[in-house]
Image 1 (tube, rainbow, N blue to C red):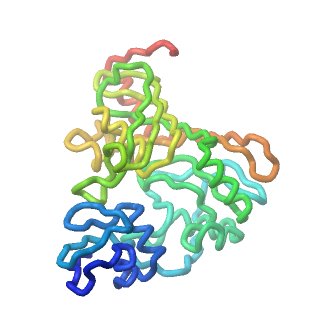
Image 2: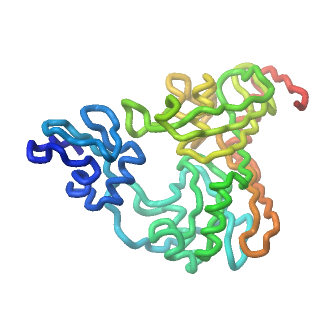
Image 3: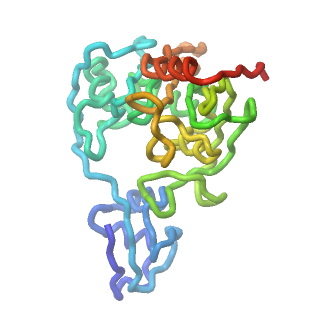
Length: 314
């Protein structure tokens, strides 16, 4: 959404002006937009206290208006890795959107969870029943869902404290030279393409930390063990692409070398292990999800067609 600040708004704070705009509607919504850098004033982000002079062009990245309710949709074969009266851990297939959004109102994991566990309704939000974190549509693997508000709050606190262990397997383009490494680089909205994320200068993005270890090298690809210390949007995909090793199948961050050597049906990225402290029993829950057949086929193809070397354990 683009608009021009009228002359009569000269001297008004940016957040107060935004709160009165159609599609924003409140100071809280205005502050969320500003905090997520969803507002540009003459092409640049500004603080909420910025004083307008009149005549500026504002660009607003507004969230899509959504329905307030979510209808349950049973899914045959929904894979559950762990479940009790407090929470469940789901093994999401690639190709399934986690919650409703632009262009995808049905067939979501959120609707499937609501059908499987009706007590999640209203936990964490009406459109995200109990969902504590998310996976991209074309990423497979584990995510935890809270059935109660208490479990939700406890799990969110663990994520914020970085005590949840999240281990991924990723096949990337190119041979990664170092046996292991850390990417500590802020991530924020891409400066020109607002649907993408990007590594940004300090102060322009949120801190993001990704650890990786080489499991297997091929002639033109590498299998990595990846662990998240933070959970930014598209973090693994952005960080690995910033190293020059985009995830296989990722056309957003991997162009022009994103095409997989065989049909893949998603990214070669899988959330394989998840560990956290149970919010009620205070014991560590460790879950694992087997490598999906689509990635196994890719690895089999690489092992049969490429020369392979196995690095020693670090």
